[in-house]
Structure formats: structure tokens, C-alpha cells
Amino acid sequence: MANGQTTMTIKKLIFAALLSGFALSVAAADQTAAPAASTTAAAAPAPAPEKPGLGTQYTDKGADTCLMCHVEGGDFPVFAIFKTPMGNPAVKGSPFAPGNLQCEACHGPGAKHAGTGDKNFINTFEADSFLTPQQRNKFCLACHQGGARMAWQGSVHQRNNLACTDCHKIHAEHDPVLTKATQPDVCYKCHKQQRMDFSKPSAHPVRFGEMTCTDCHSPHGSDNDFLLKKPTVNQLCYTCHAEKRGPFLWEHAPVAENCTLCHSPHGTVRPTLLKKSPPLLCQQCHSVNNDHANLAYTGAQLPGGSAGVSRYLLAGSCLNCHSQIHGSNSPAGDKLMR
Ligand code: HEC
Ligand code: HEC
Ligand code: HEC
Ligand code: HEC
Ligand code: HEC
Ligand code: HEC
Ligand code: HEC
Ligand code: HEC
Ligand code: HEC
Ligand code: HEC
Image 1: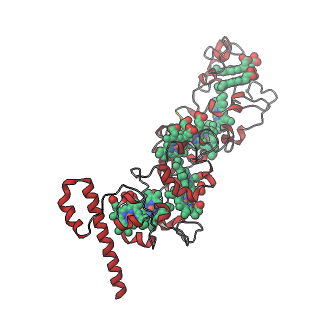
Image 2: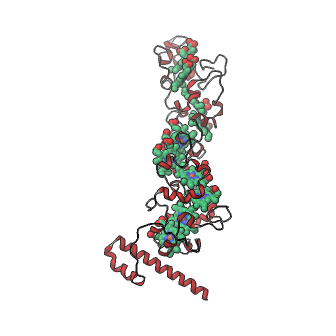
Image 3: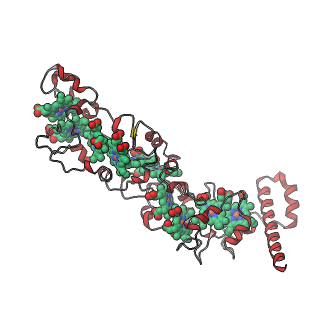
């Protein structure tokens, strides 16, 4: 009985405080709303308006305090976090592990917010927050500085002021960015060109959920160009297309140099991810005047001579003869034909 009364009193106190918080924000937003605001404020005299900012005091009871107002079925669903490693007290180092700050490990010292219900005193992780992305990220980096985040500082995403929460959802049973099939949509929010590329007729099978961006990229930063997972484009491609690595008796110079001289890594309108179709593809480099390489459509110019062979130039074009375009191991393969 006594216990119940105490709880009631606490709830009332908080409720009163909450109301005064609302009164304050209403008054600040619209001076003409003063009559309504002042009746409520009369019960609990409003302190002078304060600038938004994190409080310095943590709540005494942590999550228990927060969850008095942020209940299941409330305006802001928060309970899904308890189905993730970060909401699990048994996971070492998690915000809910014994002795850790629970909700306030991420949202910052929350006593002032808990006393007012005013979002101007809590880290909301929202884009309109009074905290900069870097300030918001600090809460996450306090626990996640190492591992994949080693290269975060100075990375292209960090320099462009991305927040961890531009990609991550915390109060969700499954963070979409961690799942192969749903990750691309998170990236496409900002990378619209890539969404287009991956829906072209020839593309890596990202659209079908068989591959994803992080098969090739490290979104938290890497020492390599374009956030690639490997130091060079070719090393990256070889991880899955090992047969293109060789060694070949007869190498084709551009293949050993960079696959993207001919292929787009994402998608194209031409077959096999080619950036251009042969003969144009080849003629970007093989353009010596009067050589058959440069005069593809005139059969007469081809080795062997007659106009009759020009049909070999249809469709596969140069590849009808130079089929070993990635390199050859035949003793007679110096022209990449066998
Ligand atoms: C007295 C009730 C109350 C308590 C206790 C409380 N909150 Fe709130 N909280 C609110 C209300 C009301 C809002 C909505 C404020 C608004 O929209 O202006 C809110 C908003 C928030 C938001 C921002 C939501 C958004 O996106 O606008 C966060 C984050 C938050 N609370 C976290 C916490 C945490 C963490 C705790 C515990 C330290 C806590 N709250 C304790 C009432 C409370
Ligand atoms: C690991 C960090 C972390 C912890 C721990 C955490 N939150 Fe959050 N919270 C976030 C982030 C990030 C967001 C932004 C929305 C999202 O990612 O789901 C958020 C959003 C919210 C919101 C606004 C939700 C909305 O839909 O806009 C509320 C309210 C909130 N948290 C309350 C809590 C409460 C209460 C707890 C403790 C039970 C808690 N949070 C624990 C990181 C955390
Ligand atoms: C108090 C320490 C702590 C804080 C603060 C914290 N985390 Fe975590 N986080 C952990 C631990 C521990 C795990 C579980 C082990 C692991 O996967 O590293 C985890 C797991 C994760 C995971 C993997 C979840 C999964 O389902 O596998 C993501 C993503 C993550 N955290 C992002 C964040 C983001 C974003 C923030 C800031 C909003 C944040 N964390 C704040 C400790 C923390
Ligand atoms: C550009 C989007 C993006 C941003 C920004 C981002 N992440 Fe991630 N994060 C991912 C993706 C994608 C994965 C899954 C990685 C994978 O599958 O290889 C991931 C995985 C994680 C994981 C779990 C796996 C691991 O590597 O330990 C943690 C923890 C994590 N991120 C923390 C953070 C923190 C902290 C920040 C902010 C400093 C952050 N992330 C910013 C996209 C992002
Ligand atoms: C098969 C590996 C691979 C996959 C999968 C992949 N990328 Fe890339 N991406 C690359 C390579 C290689 C480059 C370097 C581009 C170049 O050299 O032309 C690149 C470049 C980029 C760039 C820089 C701009 C540009 O287009 O050159 C962005 C942005 C990008 N990728 C985003 C994404 C996103 C988003 C996804 C997932 C939807 C994704 N990538 C999937 C390999 C890949
Ligand atoms: C909130 C917006 C945003 C999201 C979400 C986002 N990015 Fe980015 N990303 C950027 C910005 C801004 C840049 C730098 C400017 C540019 O190159 O477009 C960038 C650059 C890149 C680059 C090129 C790096 C370079 O060196 O040129 C790659 C690759 C990339 N992002 C991959 C990803 C992947 C993969 C994801 C999803 C896991 C992702 N991004 C999610 C905003 C975003
Ligand atoms: C993570 C594994 C992986 C990586 C890394 C990778 N690929 Fe692929 N690649 C695939 C898969 C899977 C397919 C689809 C195979 C299929 O459909 O049979 C494919 C198909 C292709 C195709 C043929 C497309 C077609 O229409 O037949 C080309 C060309 C290609 N990749 C080039 C590259 C290049 C260039 C790189 C480096 C930038 C690269 N790949 C990196 C897995 C990968
Ligand atoms: C000089 C241009 C050129 C370069 C450079 C190049 N390719 Fe290709 N690639 C082609 C052409 C042309 C085709 C189409 C072959 C066909 O239709 O028979 C092709 C087809 C492919 C295919 C699909 C068919 C097959 O042979 O398996 C893959 C996979 C592939 N390339 C991967 C790569 C990788 C990986 C690299 C870098 C190590 C690379 N390519 C560099 C021109 C090139
Ligand atoms: C990015 C430039 C580039 C592209 C594109 C390119 N090549 Fe090459 N190719 C070279 C270079 C460089 C050599 C080496 C030349 C040398 O050794 O004199 C070479 C060598 C060759 C050789 C052997 C030449 C010899 O003298 O032994 C053949 C055949 C060849 N390429 C055919 C093709 C065909 C067919 C295509 C189109 C599918 C193509 N190349 C696309 C740059 C390119
Ligand atoms: C009908 C078969 C055939 C077609 C089609 C063909 N080639 Fe050739 N190519 C050859 C033969 C045979 C040689 C070797 C010629 C020699 O040894 O004199 C050769 C040699 C080459 C060489 C080495 C330099 C030279 O002139 O000896 C290059 C480069 C080359 N071809 C590029 C191309 C390109 C680019 C195309 C498409 C525009 C193409 N070829 C189409 C049969 C063909």
C-alpha cells in the first residue's frame, strides 16, 4: 500500500514536471498561446527558458526511469533494442551490461530530460538535434572505436559529416544495413547513381540480394581509394574471379592493370558489365592508323584479307578472333586468339 503510494507520487511529480516542460515549449514556440500555457505553469512555476544542451546529471535509476514514460506502444517505440546484442545485459560491454549506463550510454546524461520530457536536453540522434554529427558519433565511438572503425576518422563518410545513425538503426530488431538484401537501400538514400547502375541489364547481382555493397566496400573507411576493401581494384576482383588473375604466358596489359578499364564494377547497359561495346571498346587503345584493329568494319583490312571475313566482326566483333581477352596460356596465344 505504502509502496503503491510512493510510485504514484513519483509518477505525479514527473507528470507535473512533464507538463511544465510542455508549457515551456509551447510558450517559446508561440507567445500568443500564453493563456493556456500560464494556467499550467501556475501549478509549477516555469524556470527561465534555457538554451538546448545536454544535461550533466545521469538519472539515478537508468532505464527504469526512462521506461516510465517511454512505454511499449508509446509515441516512440524503443523496446526492440532488447532483442539486439546491445540491449542484452549478458553481452560483455553492452550498454546494458552490469555497471553500464544503459539508455544514457547513447543518449547522454538524461536526468534533466527525464525531469522535463524536453527533447532539447537529450541526444535524440535526429538530424535536427542541437548536437553535430561528430558529437553524436562520440557516444557510439566510445565503445566502437576499434575494429572496422579504425579508419573512420578522416574517411570520406566522416569528412562528409555522416552520423553513424545515417546508416544504423538501433531501436530495431534487425538493423537493415547489417543484412545483405536490405543494405543497398540504405546506401541508395544518398547514392542514387548506384541505384540506377545496379538496375541496368548487366550488373553484379546486388538487386537479387546475392551480393551487397560491403562485399567490395568498407563503409567505415579504408586506406584504399573508393573505400575499397582491397588495396587495388584488381585484388578486389580476384577475390571472386580468381581465374582472371593468371599468371598468363601472354598477358593483356590492361587486364593486369585495372579491370575497370573495360568493366564497370556496378552495372552497364552492355553485356558483361562492359563500359563500351567492341570494337569501340578496343579501339580506345588500339587505334594505330591502317591497322585492322582500327578499321574493324572493313573486312578487306583483316588478316587473311578478303571481304568475306567481315562477318566475323558481327556481334562479338574483335572477340570472334581475339577470344582470350584476359590473357592466354597457349604457346601460340600471343595475339590472344587461343
Ligand atoms: C517524464 C517522462 C519522460 C522520461 C522519464 C523520459 N522521457 Fe524521453 N521523452 C519524453 C517526451 C514527452 C518526449 C517527447 C518530447 C518532444 O517530442 O518534444 C521524449 C523524447 C525523447 C527522445 C527524443 C525523441 C525524438 O526523436 O524526438 C529521446 C531520445 C528520449 N526521450 C530519451 C529518453 C531517455 C534516454 C530517458 C531516460 C534517461 C528518457 N527519455 C526519459 C518523456 C520522458
Ligand atoms: C546503443 C545506443 C542506444 C541505446 C542504448 C538506446 N538508444 Fe534510444 N536511440 C538510439 C538511436 C541511434 C536512436 C535514433 C533512432 C534509431 O536508430 O532507432 C534512438 C532513438 C530513441 C528514441 C526516439 C525514437 C524514435 O522513434 O524517434 C527514444 C524515445 C529513445 N531512443 C529512447 C531510449 C530508451 C528509453 C533507451 C533505454 C531503454 C534507449 N533509447 C537506449 C540509440 C540508443
Ligand atoms: C556501452 C558501449 C556501447 C555503446 C555506447 C554503443 N555500442 Fe554498439 N555494441 C556494443 C556491444 C558490446 C555490441 C555487441 C558486440 C559487438 O557486436 O561488437 C554492440 C553491437 C553493435 C552493432 C552490431 C549489432 C548486431 O546486431 O550485430 C552495431 C551496428 C552497433 N553496436 C552500433 C552502435 C551505434 C551506431 C552506437 C551509437 C548510437 C553504438 N553501437 C553504441 C557496445 C556499445
Ligand atoms: C555509410 C554507412 C555506415 C556508417 C556511416 C556507419 N556504418 Fe557501421 N556498418 C555499416 C555496414 C554496411 C555494416 C555491416 C558491415 C559488413 O557487413 O561488413 C556496419 C557494421 C557495423 C558494426 C557491426 C560489425 C562490426 O564491424 O563490428 C558496428 C559495431 C558498427 N557498424 C558501428 C558503427 C559506428 C560506431 C559508426 C559511426 C562512427 C558507424 N558504424 C557508421 C554501415 C555504416
Ligand atoms: C563488385 C564490387 C562492388 C560492389 C558490389 C559495389 N561496388 Fe561500389 N565501387 C566498386 C569499385 C571497384 C569502385 C571504383 C570505381 C572505379 O574505379 O570506377 C566503386 C565505386 C563506388 C563509388 C564511387 C563513385 C563511383 O561510382 O565511381 C560509390 C559511391 C560506390 N561505389 C557505391 C556503392 C554502393 C552504394 C554499392 C552497393 C549498392 C556498391 N558500390 C557496390 C566496386 C563495387
Ligand atoms: C547519408 C548519406 C550517405 C549514406 C547513407 C551513404 N553514403 Fe556513401 N557517401 C556519402 C557522401 C556525401 C560521400 C562523398 C561524396 C561522394 O562521393 O558522393 C560518399 C562517398 C561514398 C563512396 C566513395 C568514396 C570515394 O572515395 O569517392 C563510397 C564507395 C560510398 N560512399 C559507399 C557507401 C556505401 C556502401 C553505403 C551504404 C552502406 C553508403 N555509402 C551510404 C554519403 C552517404
Ligand atoms: C564478392 C564477389 C565478387 C567480387 C569481389 C567481384 N565479383 Fe564480379 N561477379 C560476382 C558474381 C556473383 C557474378 C555473377 C555471376 C553469375 O551471374 O553467374 C559476377 C559477375 C561478373 C561479370 C560478368 C557479368 C555477366 O553479365 O556475365 C563481370 C564482367 C564481373 N563480375 C567483373 C568483376 C569486376 C571487374 C570486379 C572487380 C571490380 C568484380 N567482378 C568483383 C562476384 C564478384
Ligand atoms: C581489355 C578489356 C578488358 C579488361 C581490362 C578486362 N576484361 Fe573482363 N571481359 C572483357 C570482355 C570484352 C568480356 C566479354 C567476353 C565475351 O563476351 O566473350 C569480358 C568478360 C568478363 C567476364 C565474364 C565472362 C568470363 O570470361 O568469365 C568476367 C567475370 C570478367 N570479364 C572479369 C574481368 C576481371 C576480373 C578483370 C580484371 C582482372 C577483367 N575482366 C578485365 C574485357 C576486359
Ligand atoms: C586500355 C587500353 C586497351 C584496351 C581497352 C584494349 N587493349 Fe589490347 N592491348 C593494350 C596494350 C597496352 C597491349 C600491349 C601492346 C603491346 O605489347 O604492344 C595490348 C595488346 C593486345 C593484343 C596483343 C597485341 C600484340 O602485339 O601481341 C591484342 C590482340 C589485343 N590487345 C586486343 C584487344 C582487343 C580485342 C580489345 C577489346 C576487347 C583490346 N585489346 C582492348 C591496351 C588495350
Ligand atoms: C578475323 C579475325 C580477326 C578479327 C575479327 C580481329 N583480329 Fe586482330 N588480329 C587477328 C590476327 C590473325 C592477328 C595477327 C596478325 C599478324 O600476326 O599479323 C591480329 C592481330 C591483332 C593485334 C596485334 C597488332 C597487329 O596488328 O598485329 C591487335 C592489337 C589486334 N589484332 C586487335 C584487334 C581489334 C581491336 C579487333 C577488332 C576491332 C580485331 N583485332 C579484330 C585477327 C583478327
